[in-house]
Length: 66
Image (cartoon, rainbow, N blue to C red):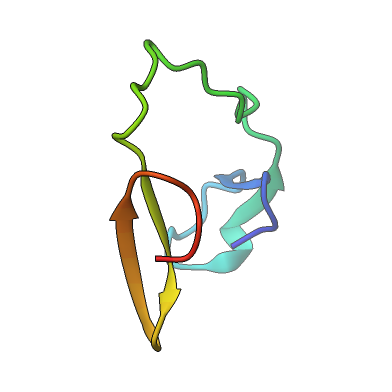
């Protein structure tokens, strides 16, 4: 296990069950966290969630505590 975004790569050809068989490498393609949505949302269909009376609760509609 390596710190993100590094990945474990088998570089020695040793046993796959041994941690020494792996080296930290950058992934071949960098993750792009900027997701472009294929559409838009109509108002009123949003779900707003938060803690209310010690429980996680969700409510559609306007922003604010559930």
